[in-house]
Length: 358
Image 1 (spheres, rainbow, N blue to C red):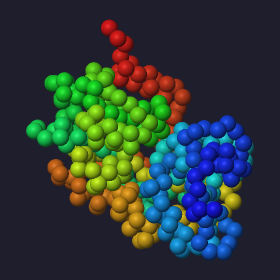
Image 2: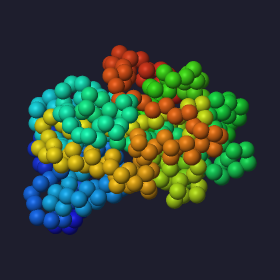
Image 3: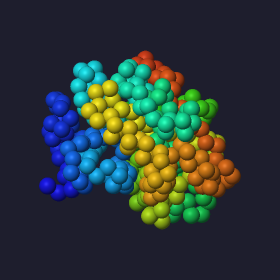
Image 4: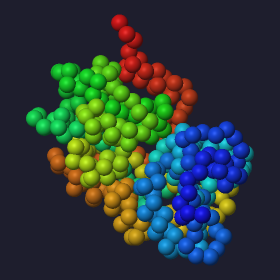
């Protein structure tokens, strides 16, 4: 067997001991153990494999007898899978890592996780952990991505106020703005909901999106691709890890930390109650926040960590130190998942972003 094999969902279900309906978005990658041993760490995540591969490699170097199975899915699909496994008290994964942190907090509060019990918790700020069961592994800003050629003359908007003014004053951005489909993306919905509570610009912002025929997508990579090739001039609320990593390789795009405020997400991990190898899962979390792991996350992937991220992002602010606002791991996130509130919020989004044709 090759060191890395990608299977369809049917194999994922077999490995995880589940049954259900196949969903094309879910894939699994198997990293065979380097040495003798029968241990298998199963990680379920929404993070692109290319971003996790260096960490997995480092983990296996230190744990040569452990194979790693990496399940990758969209945030809402992953939430459905782990929620179902928790309700049925069945195994799905040894470690769950997601950027959709409101869903993560809900699962932990619902008794789906076990106490991590690691000294690494003492090194984290309070906002980046919850109940000793959920910990923040990354430090990722929500940024604006722009096409450099499109703004070569006047420069890009640096804040939400600038973006709103540009959407009102000219037709330059008509059909040229891209962002998340917040009904499809868990992290996109989280960023949007946080925006609505952070400042008074939210209503004007989404009205501007509607007037300028914003295009919406499931994932950061799709938005960045569109900005890079010029189909869009601005990508709004893109995950900074993906944007910064791409910008270092692609001279067509630039990245802005909005000067009015910059939301910061910590991609969070927990060990499910039914984990088969909690020891290996705990070791992986400890590696991620160790000096070796921080060097990996601060490097090419630009995921950063709660320990090193603030200083790293401070160096990126072109207009002074950015106004960083980390989103705490706390029950306050559950407000965004309330069914009635979510329905009202999405109704407002639809009415503003896709107004009826006159």
